[in-house]
Length: 405
Image (cartoon, rainbow, N blue to C red; front, top):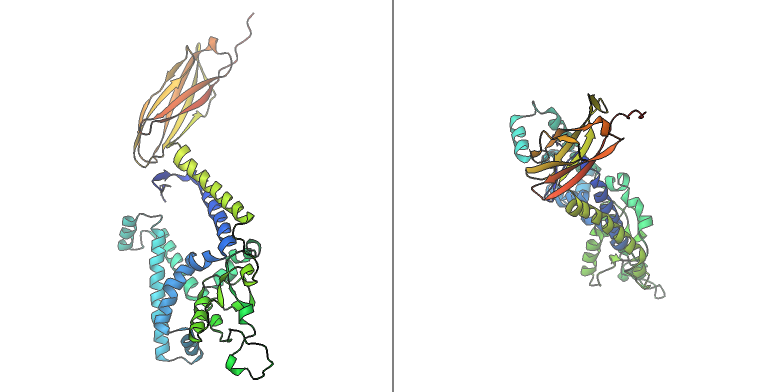
C-alpha cells in the first residue's frame, strides 16, 4: 500500500489503474442483479460475508456456549448469577479474539504478511497508523457480530430494498405454500364435521423462532428475508415428525406457489447477463489483451517553450516511463525526426524494476532558418522483455521567422 503497488491475476497495477475497478464493480453489480432476478436473495443467504461469518463462526460459538435460542432467551430473562456471567464473559472473549484475527487478516491484504508478523512482534509503538486500523477494525467487527448482526441487513444494507424492483413472479424465493398450509391447526382438534379441512401448517411457529430477522415467512415475501433457508429446515423437520410431505416452506417462485406456468428464461435475465458480461469482458480485454505492460508519456519540459542558441532552436522534452511488469524489464528508446534535426537521447537503454518509474530528457535541435512552424517529433518506446512498443508524438515549436524582403 505504501508503494501504491497492487497485484491481481499475475498482473501489476499502480494507482493510475484504479479506474479499472469501475468495470469490476459494474460487472459484480449487474451479476448480482442477474442472480437476484433469477434466484432471489441467494447471495444474502449463502454468499454475503455478513451471513457467512455470522452463521458459520459466531452463532455456532454462541450455541456451543449458551445453548440454543430458547435456552438463551430463558437465561437472559432470568436474573444474573455466576454461571450466566461466566458464560457471557467467555463468549465475548472468544468474539474479541476472532475479531482480532479477522482484522489482521484484512490488514494482510495491504501489508505483506512477513512485515505484518514483524510489526506484531515488535508492538504498536512504532506503527501507530497500522495499530489504529487494527483496533478500529477489531472494534467494528466485534460490534457487528456480537450485537448489531441482522440489523446490518435490515437497516444499513440497501440491497434488501431493491427486491421490489428486482424480483418478479418468476424469481426463485423462499415462500410458504398457502394453498397447502391453510387453514392452520392440528387435525386432531377439529371438532365440527362441517369445518373446512385443516391444512398441513400446525402453527408451531418453528419457522419464526429460527428466522435470524424474526419475520413470519407465512406472510409472504418480505424485505427482511435474507434467504438463509433456516425456516425451510425447521418446517421440514416438523413435517417429518408428522409424516407429511416436505416443502410446505420451500424454494419456489410466486408463479409456482400460485400454480401458474413458470418461465425461467425471460428478457430481464438476458439484459442483466449481457451487461455483466460486457463489463467483465471490457476488464478482461484491457487487462489481459490490450493492456500495454508499460506506461509512457512524452511531456514538454516546463519553464520555456524553446531556446534560441545563435542560429539554432532547441526544444527539450521529458519522457516519463513506468514499468508495469511484475518483474524487471528492459526498454529501448529511439526518435523519428525530420531530416536535418539533431536529437540527443542521454539514456537510450533503460532497465526498470517492477512498477519503477523514470524520467529522462530528450533534446531536439534544428536550424532556425528551416523551422516553418510546429512539426511532429515521434519517440518510439520498445519493451524488449515483452516485445511491445508504443510511439509517442511531441510537437517541436520554434520562433516565427520574419518575412523575407
